[in-house]
Structure formats: structure tokens, C-alpha cells
Length: 394
Ligand SMILES: Cc1cc2nc3c(=O)[nH]c(=O)nc-3n(C[C@H](O)[C@H](O)[C@H](O)COP(=O)(O)OP(=O)(O)OC[C@H]3O[C@@H](n4cnc5c(N)ncnc54)[C@H](O)[C@@H]3O)c2cc1C
Image (cartoon, rainbow, N blue to C red; front, side):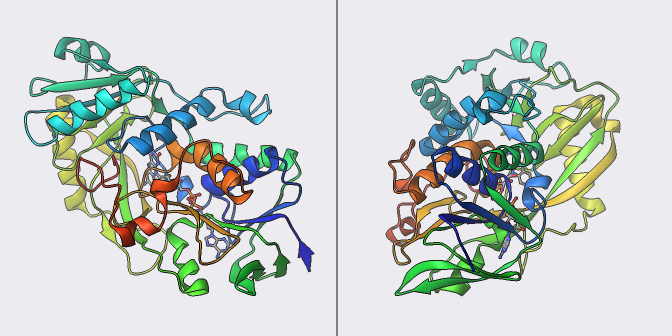
């Protein structure tokens, strides 16, 4: 029986970030447990897009604090060799006349009010940045030059490595089977490799967060939802210099980015396929789906009309009713802190979320106010629903 100051369940990009921050804040004995391998959950399936654009202002704050970390990653981790694999190509988001226009204008203004560099582009300026796309229907185009994409798996393994440097113990291939309570308070976990004691447990289990409900009886409003990502091989280069593009005018609210060379990574930003059980194994991608996405892409990128599918994969989102995470303590179980429900946009928030969950676990004031992300919001009706409708823009 081993005793720790904090135990983190899950070694995805959120759990490894929490572990690193716990150690950096001076928590001496931290244990991370993962049933599989570091980053092998949904983190390895991420498209990796980093932006601060959100229509929910709380998310803007978390994304902004996270961006500062991504931008100075090696220094922040104290590991000169660490890399987030960042490509700072900018993020462009456009809407035609219609229901997405007012929310876009409002969200861009809110970002600027937060001190984030965001510019409004004319159609010709947009064309010069992303010459392979057409903008003739765009009524409003926002551009965040400091945004881009990075590598979520690399970030998770870098957080893990930096955490280990600070003395954190990470055990892979260990499944947590039960949360142990004594007098109603957290006292540890029972696992496939025995019992580990701690008064503080942080669950970052993503689509497997329903375990919390099984262990504590507290409702965990999270649904596993499968999404597909395609890498299309086009005739024209989508270079690393060209911005990520969010197409609010397409039926699937597509996001597109360079995948190197003449390849484009593309996926939808709307509701996906609900799974009966959490499972991040690869699912089928139907030919109809590929044709549908191909047609939407060709509408925006005419030369991709002839594009072929170079590769494809599925990934699973941990979706909550308002498509935003649950962060913080569960007051009915003292000692338990949770971070789940990232609904397809948790990578870009992972540095700040790791910091605030670590601060919360240690009873410190949090860098960014996480009260709005409390589980109680679902009972009290204070949802954090984004203004673009359900989908991972939030
Ligand atoms: C297709 C796709 C595209 C995405 N694109 C983007 C994007 O462009 N930008 C963005 O910001 N976000 C994106 N996301 C979301 C982002 O990748 C996730 O929010 C983030 O990676 C989740 O990290 P996590 O640590 O919460 O979960 P995970 O990486 O899933 O980690 C959870 C871990 O917990 C472990 N675990 C669970 N239960 C137990 C247990 N009982 N015992 C032991 N271990 C356990 C699992 O093994 C797993 O390793 C995308 C997600 C997907 C699927």
C-alpha cells in the first residue's frame, strides 16, 4: 500500500498537464495511472488546432492562457528539448450572410476586448493568405495570426517527461477499478495492480468519465461521440504557411488545415455519431460520408474537386450537453477533482486546464475562474452553450 499526495487517473494531454502542474506547484508525491499508454486515448486522435476563437468567453480566457504556454513551451516545461510541434500559420474563420454572422462578429469583438490580436480581412486579403480557397460568399472574415496547430500526442508526452523530471511517477497499463472512500472522503484507488492511497484524486478520464458515476453515484453527463477526420490529397499545395480555415458557411461547419505537401486535413464541427459505450477503437467511415465531405470541400477549395483520400481515421469526443467541460471539485465527494467533457476542443485548453485543476486540487486560487465550469451548472441551468449551435467551436 503506497501513499501519495495526489493521484491522477488518465495520462492524456489533460492528465499529464495536471501532473506536471501539481509537481511544479510543489506537490511532492504525485502518481499518474493509465490503463493503456501515455497519449493513447483520444489525445492521439486530435487534429491539434490551436485558436482562442470561441463564442463562450470563459473558453477564450482558458485558450488565451494556454496559448502563452504553447508559445513558450520548452521554457515553460523547463526542458530545452520539448516541442509542441507548433505551426503558427494563423486561423481564419468566415461566415456568409445568415445565422452565423452575428455570433462571429460578436465573438471576434470579445476576443479583441481580451487583448487578443484578431483582424478583420477583406476578401482579397483572405485570398492572398489562402489562395486555394474562394471567398466570394464571405460576409465577414476574422483572422487570428498567432493561432495555428500543434501535435497533441507530442504535447502529452512532453508534459509527461517534464513531470517525471520533477519526480512524478507514471504507471502505464494500470486500470483504476474503484475510487476508495473513508468517512465519505477520498482515500485512494483500487487498481488492477493493487491499492494506492491518497486524499486527493484527479480524474481526467475523458470518454471513460462515466466511471465516476459508477464509483460515486454522482451523475456524469458525458456521451462518447465518434467523429471522422480525412486527409485529402489535392492537386495544389496547402502549405504550412497557409492558415487553418473554419468554414461557418458549410453544412458541416468544416475545419481545414495543412497536413503537409498537397494534403489537407478536414473534419466537421457538428454533432457526430453517439456510441453506446466509450470506445476509441477505429470505426468505419462510409463512402457516402467521404463523398459528402469531399463535396463540401470542393465548394470552398475548387481545385480539391479532384482530391483523393490519402488517409482517414476516427476519434471520439467526450460530449457534455453544452459542449463544454466539467472542471473542479465534486463537493459531495471531498478530495475528488474532475476534468472531463472537452467535447472535441480540449487540446487547445490543456495547459491552462492542467494548471487550474492542479491549483484546485491543492486548495489554491485558480489562475482562471473555473466556477462557470462546475457540474452544478447542468442542474442550475447556467449552461455554457456556444452561439454557433452544438459543435466543437463552442
Ligand atoms: C478527432 C478529434 C479531433 C480533435 N481535434 C481537436 C483540435 O483540433 N483542437 C483541440 O483543441 N482539441 C481537439 N480534439 C479534442 C482533444 O484532442 C481532446 O479534448 C483531448 O486530447 C482530451 O485529452 P484527455 O486527456 O481528456 O483524454 P484522453 O487522451 O482520452 O485521456 C484519457 C485517459 O484516461 C485513461 N483512463 C480512462 N479511464 C481509466 C481508468 N479507469 N483507469 C486508468 N486509466 C483510465 C485512458 O486510457 C486515457 O489514456 C479532438 C479530438 C478528436 C477525437
